[in-house]
Length: 420
Ligand code: GDP
Ligand code: IMO
Ligand code: MG
Image 1: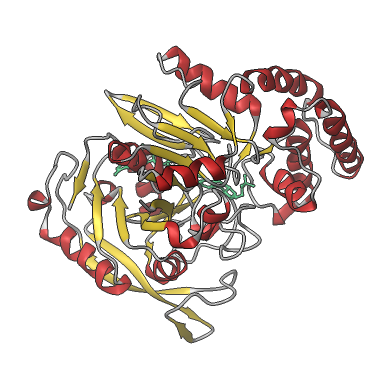
Image 2 (image 1 turned 180 degrees about the horizontal axis):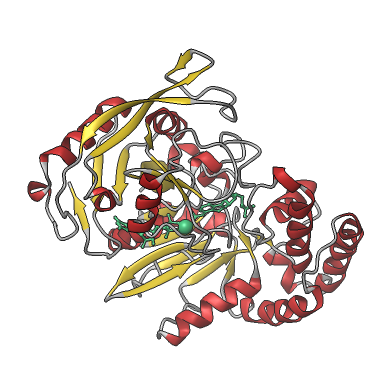
């Protein structure tokens, strides 16, 4: 059985958590493969909203295996907070949540460095979540990082001190007021909690599951426009959010990938700095933010909002080999008279219908307008109920991308989902 992958196609927060929770009953195993606690994946059922950062979004379906893959970076403190929060709800993950020994650890000094480096960038700051993601992946590539597998070694403290000492030197260049000692104490306690989980050679386990015909869903974090190679560099995260990241972040061969579910909002948002061609810096954008409750699940920051960007959507469908599209938050546009989609960018008089190298410049989006549906779709549960204007909007996206929209989400709750 091949591994299906679910990926964000925009700048994150497309509704991955919700949809993974909806799809989990069809799978045996849910894995995360990149990113870390910069992610905030929300899901909702029985009128309760849950936000997960490091833990896969399949955990509310008791019998499933959840895996934190080798490509993920783990902050033990945040992991412990998530675990304890779930334990209070009666969800004890110590038996069915496995952690890859090859996943890297976000150290307290990574967080301090993230804060210090970001502050030093002034106007060029990325708008990082400040969870230590960049410095942790930097050490991974620099071959000086600490991995989960190291925590069982006699030499763990020695390795920890060696890396921390390097960081202390860097922190003289990038000072912050981050409480390193206080965080380190919590961090060491949380390391003891991590030892209670199955720490596994995840690449072997996952490939064995594939041989056993188990159904696996890989849950992406962030979104392709934040990908380190193909996103709006340098305003990106430090991992590969594209489908290929599922191969390196889990240890599976490309020919083991099955369906690629690409998820996008009916409009688009971004949190943090960086170019945003279709950004609506006006009352329409404010209305989308208000109705869509567009505030970050990890940092609470207001998200920037804009019209759907088809130039970007086609680009990311190409990069990821998306086989099925999932559209979320169409309900947020219920009251809009007109809905727009950018089909090209005009830069210095030249029209681009594909993603150019640099979009951090003056861009005039070329819009196609659609008549709004002006109907409350949030209670609709079947395709037959959906207004024709919405179906026309969806059909246009399908035609332009060449990929079918297989799920339409019409609200944050598990039930508010139309599978076509
Ligand atoms: P993720 O990072 O991709 O998992 O997305 P987030 O959880 O950060 O942000 C998505 C937000 O939209 C969350 O607050 C969800 O509860 C909410 N949401 C998801 N799908 C829908 C939908 O179809 N309609 C509405 N109104 N909200 C949704
Ligand atoms: P999910 O998985 C939205 C953004 C940050 C910042 C940039 C770099 O919930 O979709 P980092 O902390 O990685 O150094 O930040 O990336 N960012 C996200 N934006 N959703 C996310 O995750 C994000 N993870 C990182 O706001 O602009
Ligand atoms: Mg999120």
